[in-house]
Length: 533
Image 1: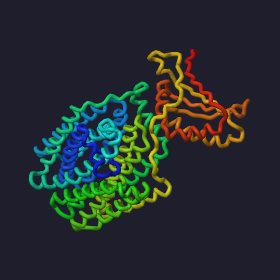
Image 2: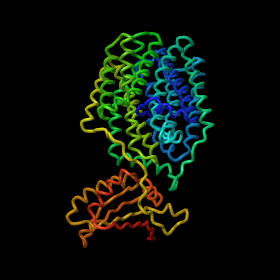
Image 3: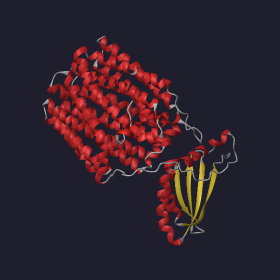
Image 4: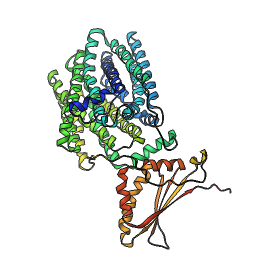
């Protein structure tokens, strides 16, 4: 399971979440599981090398690991928001354990082929893809609210400590006990997580409105991202960076093999990368206090690009290790900041889904980039592919000129302030009537018409983001100062949810609209009437 990274804190605050037994046990079990996963990752990559599969197949190992996040992230996020997250996590962990057992058995029997290895790697990653959105969204259930930032930081440190230790152990295991042992170790490492999750009693989430359907919840997150400019900026920036940055991790096995034929060299380089990530995570808070989000992210991306170019030029293992140390520190900086920005822009009701969309873009770009750089390395040379990937990574910093990252968090606290009328049909079927037409009449001062229209169109984005599938503004032809805002929701249940989805950050938008009108708006709710022909 992958944790969510936040800024690091001073020692007393950082370790305080460990006083919560469930979080402490999950973190320890997760550390063992992640180390096992990284050990298996080294074994899978080196298995491809030993099978003489070529750079393309080696790079496709990373594609097989990332592609399930692209295909399954959104359904997983939707299910993580509307179903029991604990059961979902438990199912995913059992699935990954079973796949790991099959991998170990086939490896020990000598029956693994490049294609079969890719298929099973994909199946293992599919379990992780289904689990990750629910796991990240569950963090507030594990620790008190005040412990969320340090708990998130501990998750990031845990994951990158596993990244530092796991690959190095993987290289040692391959050298001492053979490649098949790495798969067996991963199968055993998942037992702890399954045991802790099985004993954990998750909290029952309370909903004021009716439960969302799978289709409705999927449409809701697509709509939310579409009408959230800050989120779109984050997704574009992270996708562009990851497409180019994936080249280094995808081609690192080939680089290690070219420099040294020993499996420990690949583990050493990945260990340096993970160590750099841990050091970068610990130093991140100090950097954040001195620089803006844009400066920190762009600086991290720039350093990573330079390290990628260096990996294409250097052929001495210690110097490559130093380059990976810098790359790891840069990686954790921009990846964790992308995650933090997403969390700061997203309310709880849609958080798992938005995280899933972020993972879809992140992992989809990584999968596509890994395949592209592997193909380029096959057609030309690993050095050339790495230099182009590094140059592309550096070039993405130019996106900051016109797609600036938001620097301040948004107040996503629920703001339930609109009066919800009592509908005539109060039985259980009443919530499904629809579509619902909502009209809001405004009396606009003549001198405020231009400013009002500008403000109301900003309000459109809020209406559509939270549930409206059609919106319009009309002017009364008989009474020119009267404007009528209209919007449609799919059902009464969806309109109830629309009331619950408002956040305090929307207050400024609403107040700006109200500053241009006289009196109080008149709101009406109309249900669609079926007529016989």
